[in-house]
Amino acid sequence: MSLPTKSRNLIIEDVISAIYAGGVEGGPNGNLKSQVKRVGVELGRRKASQFTKRLLDGLSENPDELVQLEALVVLGFAHPEVMRKHHIALNTEGRRLGVLLERAGRPERAQEIFEMLCSLAPTERTLELELAGVMRRTGKSSELIERYMERAQQHLRKGEHELALPWLQEVFALDRSRSDVTAMIREVRHHLSNRIHAARSNKRFALAFVCFAAVFGALGYREWNIQAQYKHLAAANRTDLTSMDARIVALQDLRAEHRIWLGSNRVASEIQELQEQQAALLQSFAEQAQAQQEKLKEQLEMAEEWRRQGLEAVDRSEWAIARERFEKALESAPANWQHRATLEVDVAALRTAEAGQ
Image (cartoon, rainbow, N blue to C red; front, side, top):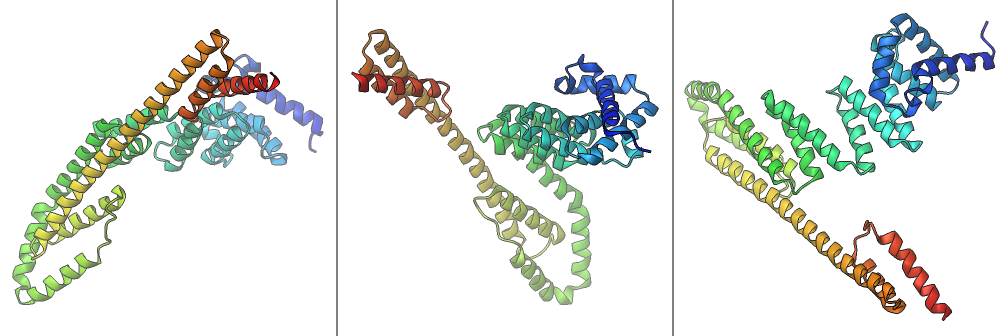
């Protein structure tokens, strides 16, 4: 016999109160790591299993009930083995909770949820993308860049250059003015290229030499076949770093596979040309980003100067001049200028005062 709805709700409220220490730690607004740590210490596996079952009963009636879902995920972080016992996909429920929290106007809590999910499943790329989306939408690109740089450095310290490269590229996509990242990307690509070459060089050369001796009579066919492979490689978009990367890797693989053939020098020249174009494109992106920053700085300086002159005119009770200076400041400033909202109100008030005179 099931409990009456009122009694069942009271039980769920008791569960939530136990998970959040009766609100002492700030309830759903408290520090997530501290809450998870406390739940893991204070609640045994048996109690956690009972709480999980009760929360699941409540969520079966209202799957998007935010407080209950959040309590379930906190419990799951503290006791992942209990989640597995009840066949709950913690990553799935955590992602759903993060989306609901952001929609409910709690992006900071959503970020905490995704950060903990990423720490539990560091290889889950989808979770990293969800976290990146939340941080971008809340204006935390600098923190996101630091997170990606830390990931890249961890892989580099372990010698995992192929795993570090995507994180460095993410940093560059967020901030194209980072010349240090540009240099690191070049170094990693050079390392990967040398490693591929060194790993395959002796084996491929010996294999090519044996094959050449064995099929000497069919050399013409071999050359034709390799040329056909070269012609069928996907062309590179010379304005797209990823496209050029794909072309370079394909050419390196072709060159490594066929060390001796008439077109090998042409392939080597094309690889060098593409790498030089990549370097030039990276430099161009950095210069464009720098120019944009300088332009923004000039706009801000001009806007601040017009604002200063307007404030001085206000002090002198020269209302028309003040309005004119404020309007010029608004025209000069970027859209996200910190004084824009205030000046717009001031300009509107000055126009109203002038109209009433």
